[in-house]
Image (cartoon, rainbow, N blue to C red; front, side, top):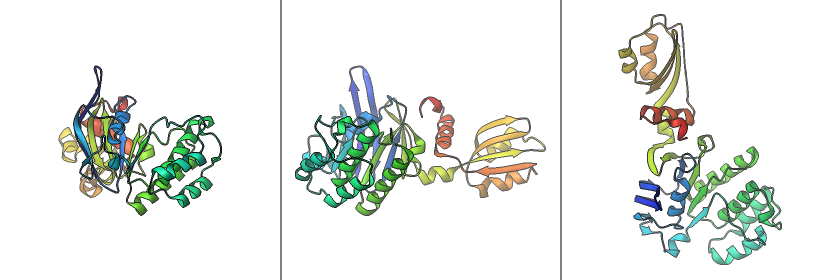
Length: 298
């Protein structure tokens, strides 16, 4: 388990992470979402022990991670721009990692080299950004980390490779009880992968939800009324966002269809349709209801 307790990190006058608290359960996949410059990358560097927080602490399995080699050895962090030396290839980096990581899995490494479109003897520094990310992920998963921290891992990957990366991550979480933390500015990439999502803006945790809880909690409804109800009706059925064009209403409703559909049908509408919302739509609605301009955050 990763425990993040009231951490703050400043760079000069800029507060990159501001009194951030969060628990990350073992064997889960957490998505950290926010705009560029929102604090995602700094947070990951603190979680991995690269940076020390100015205040607060990060504990993994009850131990502080900063300056703790035994705890750091259970983590693998892939930054937004993975670093490789000028001569690094997958093969010679794997040779080095075999001596550094006691849980190195040679069979997994060979398997990943066969499924990813990468020449293991080619210089990684000469590869595209997307290929460098693939190389970093092959090496990371082969070390069999307990905690894998990923910064914008899907950036620069084509759709086929993205699906492959998601499958590998899901398989390793399931088989090895690995914990994955992924920072991204793209909610769509995380929707089918994560158990939980948190939203960070200007270094602060604005929102944190279980994916299943989010999807069960809100519905998008379009309805055409014969007679337009008054505002008290919309309050009664827990409408949190409303857009109207004449007698046609697009509603975001908090609750289950069993709760609100009978009340809508009592109004004998000309037309009614309830559809699931995407994760991005849900977050925009939640943030709007909380008074934030979500379009500038997500």
